[in-house]
Image 1 (cartoon, each protein chain N blue to C red):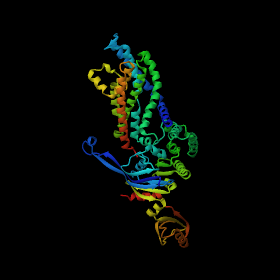
Image 2 (cartoon, rainbow over the protein chains, first blue to last red):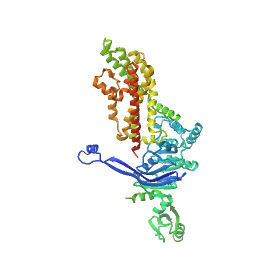
Image 3 (cartoon, rainbow over the protein chains, first blue to last red):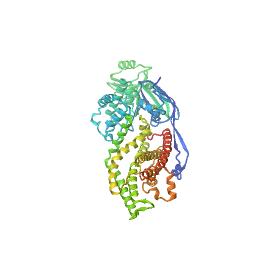
Image 4 (spheres, rainbow over the protein chains, first blue to last red):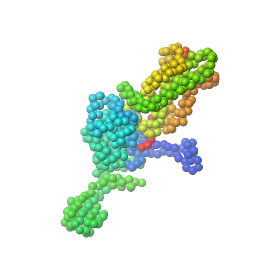
Length: 325
Length: 255
């Protein structure tokens, strides 16, 4: 049985219909008329224990709303969801014991207290045996390099430090599932790298199931073996990043350096750009193997160097978002 | 149990972070105490009793009602409003303690902060204002507990409105003004005109301050406890119902 299962998940939000024109504000205030916005529209997926899944989509696609239904914060309008056999919104506390959550935009840490106080409280709330807590704390302090700010009040931490503290608070009681909602938002390159490494370690050593939402494709490239792409509340794609690249961007690029400028024409490849001794060729590896292309180039042209460009997930996603309604 | 105590401990240390703020919270009851005592002394001006109420009864009333008001003044409404408005309530909902129980524990934590504050106000009150011996100490203690619980329920009901409106500023201001009066914190019910007294007696707030103090003074007894118990059951049920509905319609603000 899958660890996380969503079937036909729907969430509607209601808000008062905004009036326009004369006395618009007042008329909005007294009107009972409301409009319905469907944030999540029939999302289904299942995630097996130990998977590390990227949940992607543009702003407002319904990612966070889905996460809030999986964590039990929101009650679904329709559909079913179970996490480790528990219906999250029916049994919020049972569910809370199985999961860890990090919201990049807010913190579960106690604002006015030293970081270590928040961690200690989490240990108690989850009824951790003292020795286990001490062990995990020592491990996380080491892994996340938290020693320098363990006794600093949370309100004085930098964003990167706070995020590390939040990760520790979400994982110190060893939940089976970890939800990361934009954990790297606003962080510098080094801080992002550290968090990715922590999540990768956690997934491989503890077998924690991770569901990650992010706008940073480097997060996804570094971590996820599976992607679920949603937009307008519906699932667009569910599969590996490689398959996504193949289906949305089958073309690869070869950059060729030439000893002297000349026209390059090779069967099975299209010239994208040419000039100053550099030519960019686009080809479909399914039809023209890269090796054949390269050997033909070396045979016919004064080639000094070639480099094969990896398909960028960022470009693929951009293409998908741009192509939407 | 340990997790509840740990939660309370954290809440207490959080409140204690802002010591300067606590100092100001002390000025409030002291000021109320001294001003009320001055007013009642002027009313009594040489008379030993007014409408059959002796001056020592009245000064004791002022002393005790001030302490009770201090006990009832609670940050919970403000706290819930803030959490709902900022969307931080989402975080609270994924904690392993139910949201409503978190609020009750928060209220209990505030008592732990109030006790040392009372230790400062109490001697000042006894010396400057006065205190007679309690008529029924056990019954008074029970009534104080019931009064505190009723107050918790009323505040939780007000706080729950934030789940619908997101904003409670005007409502809490109105509540604090009206509750000072309706609870008997400023004027004891026995000096109110008949129609007003009847109205106040039909409302729950008199059960928070007036009833325990009246029991202390021997002006009420098991009858008052009975009314308090009834209010506690009614309001307690209302809190559970309203919070259940609130959680069902919770909307987390801001992504």
